[in-house]
Length: 144
Image (cartoon, rainbow, N blue to C red; front, side, top):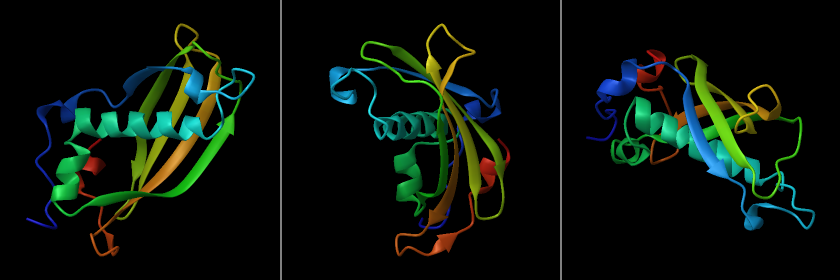
């Protein structure tokens, strides 16, 4: 079955944006109670995984079909700090795709404060085979 993508879920026709919520715990912060910059990457990764799970198929399903998604390029801007105890919202959507790349846009903000961005990110993903060879992006990603 390697090389064929898993069957998309029916929810693939829903609106493009996906909302992921998380809370800032002590382990996420530095000594001042501010989210350590590298932890935003974890929030972004979790939100992308949930996006794929909701809109298409499980990430594990893609792995079973021989597709491994890797970050090719990451552009991130830190606008304001998240703090211990904050509830965060990560908005995720696919901005565009090409034969070999998917560009994902993401915004992190405090829950209830939709105009004050904490982080904005543009993440370019590629698909590779189990051997590390570049593969075409599964067609269902282009439909999003």
